[in-house]
Every structure is written in C-alpha cells, then in structure tokens.
Length: 452
Ligand SMILES: Cc1cc2nc3c(=O)[nH]c(=O)nc-3n(C[C@H](O)[C@H](O)[C@H](O)COP(=O)(O)OP(=O)(O)OC[C@H]3O[C@@H](n4cnc5c(N)ncnc54)[C@H](O)[C@@H]3O)c2cc1C
Image (cartoon, rainbow, N blue to C red):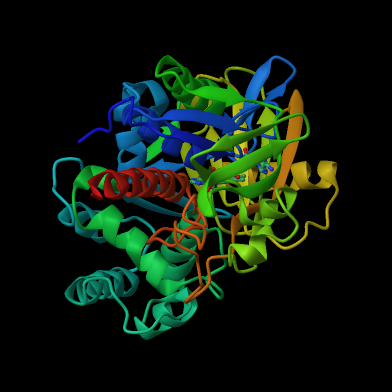
C-alpha cells in the first residue's frame, strides 16, 4: 500500500548513479519527497554517456542480460519500453583465438535450459570432450541448485567440474570476466553460479544479450531522470555532499542534516548511494562509522575505434581470447553508430602500452579474428578514444563481506552495486540495492505509522 503524500517523508538520496536513481523513483512512487544530490555535472555515475566531439560514447561499453529483472522492472516503473533502451540479441557467442573460432548459437525455438544444451551440442570449434563435460557439469550444477557448500574461486570450481582448457578459454573464462570483471583465479564461484543460474535455468530470454541502443545517458539515464522529475523529484547536480550529521530533537534522533559546500538541510531519511571509496568525500570517518569494509577494485578499459560508416563486423558482438582485447562491439549494428567499434578489456593488469600502442594492438587482434572471415580493418581509424575506469567494479572474490542496506543509524540507508546480494557489481546489482534501500525507508515509515 502506498504511503499518502501527507504521510510521505522528505528523503535525500546521495549519488545519481543507477542505485540512487532507482531508489528515488521507488520512493517517489510511494508518495515521498525526494532530493537527489549528485557531485558530478551529470547523472549516471559509472554508467554514463561521454561526448567525443559530436559522437556520444559511454564511459565504458556495457552489456546487460535478459535476467536483469530489477533493471527491466525499473524501466517498466518509469514507463520506458525496454526496446527503447536495449537491442536484444538471443544468446550467440562467437569467440576468436587468432584464426580459430568457436561459435555457439542458441535456438530461439527451444525453452531454457534446452536452448543451451542445443547450443553446446551444435557449437562449432568446440571438441566433443569439451561439449560433453560442459553439459554434464551444467547438469550437476542444476542438481545442486547452483549452490556451493563453501565458496571458492572459479578456477577451482572449473577444475573440480573437469572442464577442458578449451571450454574454459572459449566459454567459462570470457563469461566470468564479462559478468564479474574479476579474473577466474580470483573470482567467486558462488557469484558466478548465481549469474549462470539466472541466465540459463529459467526462461530462454534470460540469456539474451541486452545492448544499450544508444549512449547510456541518452538511452537510459535521461529518460529515468525525466520520469523522476515528472513525479516531483529534484536532482541537484554539481552538489557534492560534504557532511552527514544526526539531527536530534528532545534527545531523540529525528533525521539527518545533509550539508554541501553551500547549504545544509534536514531530511527525515538519507540513502547514501555513492561508491564505497567515495564515502570519504562525505565524511572522513563515514566508512568506518557505517562499517563498510575496504574493497579491492578491478579496472575496465574501452577502446573506441571510428572507421568509415560502411565498416561492419560479421556479428554485432565478437569475443577475442588470444590477447588483450576481450569483446568487440559493432556500435553500428548495436547503437546506430556506423563504423564505430568498442573494444572492451576487463579486469586487466596495468597497461604497459601507451594509447597508440594499445590501439594498434586492439586493431591487430581484431584483424587476426577477421582473417577467419577473409576480412580486415584496412585503413587507420578516423579517430580513437581510450577510456579507462580504474575502479570500474569491486573485485568479486569468494566470501566477500558486503554490507547490507541498513546502518546503525536508523535514518541512514545504503545503496550501491557493492551492497550484499547475489550479483556482482552490475547495473542489476545497483538497481536491486536502490529498490531495497527505498523499500527499507518505506517499511520503516509503515512500522512508525502502525505504532499506537
Ligand atoms: C567501464 C565500465 C563497464 C561496465 N560494464 C558493465 C556491464 O557491461 N554490465 C553491467 O551490468 N555493469 C557494468 N558496469 C558496472 C555498472 O556500471 C555499475 O555497477 C553501476 O553503474 C554502479 O551504479 P551505482 O549507482 O552503484 O554507483 P555509481 O554509478 O558509482 O554512482 C555513485 C554516484 O555517486 C556520486 N557521488 C559520489 N560521491 C558523492 C558525494 N559526496 N555527493 C554526491 N554525489 C556523490 C558519484 O558521482 C556517482 O554519480 C561497468 C562499469 C564500468 C565503469
């Protein structure tokens, strides 16, 4: 049941990333007053558009999957049709190692998990031993409900599951890197299994790739902000929160004083939706007061290559696993930006090459793969852009302690992709945490109203 506007609270959300925006939308739907403070000049946080002259890129090429239920619910809540935001591609993996290729295409006419079984059985470039072991392993995981008695690394799990080096390098390692942005030698097997379970065990569409059909700001963030503002929400950009302080009345904690460089205002509740390393921007001692553990982070580099408009890859998304580059997105086929390629390098060690060396290496690796199709990127690109996000995601390791939504202060709640949940640091994790934090605020109000 919705709280009435008169019973609504005044809530501050700190951070206009997807966690903060989701929390704000849910609260507004329930009749609360919401003000979102964002330090940056634009919303979106780690999922935002970036301008390169007249071309709109992203701070990093993103990929979502059909199993992102909270994300799809957010779109529904904001009256945004998923087709406006995402290009949906049924599961297809085209992985390249130099001139070798592995292609797994799942049929759209079979339900899950048979579509994966069929895809594995008919995969080109995967030997029978690898196929058989992959199928047996998936069956075994299903029997144990994709749940491990104790968490371990993905490498150990794959070894226990007797996966062949070929299946690991063409299938499991690229999927783990894409989902967890953590090398398999470090990555949490349980979180990886959560993603495999949600992608492959329920509906066939859950394993679809959802590729944002324009830059993230135009396709996703701006429409969400517009909906938020239509519901009466306020967004204050360039408004870094510098301090949070308990507000008291008659010896009772009644709310929170939120301060920026230019103003201070009391709110009933606050949702802190900044990255864990950004808490110190709010208060030096905030992270320890809120009991946030220190996280390790993994970078993601995206190399954009603009070729002439007729340049087109054989597939919208190609996997590479013989060097540095891992995925190449043809933004002409995905985002209506002909000739623009986005090369993704996840969880990489510090890059030794300078920008031109990195670009040259990416082009060489793409050309090795294109040789399989008797093609090549002939000329030099018209322009290039390299964006590295050093703290793209937390390192998703086994048994990682992640905090919950509630804090020791009843008026301060946490949201963000690092909050405890089944998912790694993803858009889905961020949205889920935002909804959970909003729900905690709503539930608290219901409890207060129910008290005699
Ligand atoms: C390059 C890259 C590629 C990625 N690829 C994928 C992918 O393919 N699929 C996927 O699902 N996920 C991907 N992710 C992860 C995904 O983008 C994040 O998990 C998600 O965007 C995190 O959202 P968030 O709201 O938790 O945090 P953030 O987006 O970090 O939002 C926090 C916000 O708080 C603001 N802030 C900080 N301090 C203050 C302050 N003191 N006052 C006010 N505001 C403040 C920040 O400016 C920021 O806007 C990728 C991330 C990166 C960087």
